[in-house]
Image (cartoon, rainbow, N blue to C red; front, side):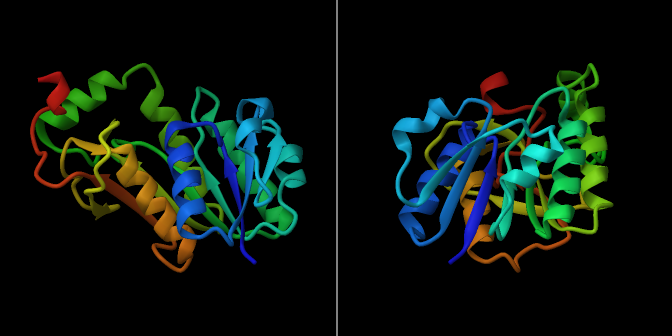
Amino acid sequence: MMKVLVLGAHGQIARLVETQLAAEAPEIQQTWFLRDSQRLASDASPSITLFEGDAANEADIQRALPDVDLVYANLSGSNIEAQATAVVKGMKKGGVSRLIWISTLGIYDEVPGAYGKWNHDMLDGGYLETYRAAAKIIEASGLDYTIIRPAWLSNKTEVDYELTEKGTPFKGTEVSRASVADLVVKIIQNPALYQKSSLGVNKPNTDGDKPEWYR
């Protein structure tokens, strides 16, 4: 029986992943890792384990890893680099190799044109630098990682997305959280997908200088 550790289990995309995974693959055991487990206590079930911890604490990561087959990290914050370091070290010591890591667009300066400049300006103040540093840690880890770099996120219920690989220009300006969740669930169900890959994720035909809600 497969077991998945969800880091940052209260995040918006993580909640969609958890729900979709329970519906499509109820046999997969989920461990929800978050700072305050009471936030999700009402959603616990026999297939769900709640774990309270700090994702920047390597010891907490290790304690959550027994019998885990795959780690899905839905983390954020100014300490994202420290979290990446703790996750990598914890996974390597725990003998777990498969990681899905949510990042952001622009960490490789891969967003072209006016949209790339707008994105950089909007995420100024060290945000891109810290997420870029975290991605470098993941890429140098030796783990079987998939980094996901979503476009600007919407709460639309649609699932409509396309992918770009690292080294190619980013496409589109937006994507729904439901679309990102769908990609994560597909990888969890088939962990051989997109190993050692960094994927841009966008809704097709949304090219422009910024997402539609900013125009």
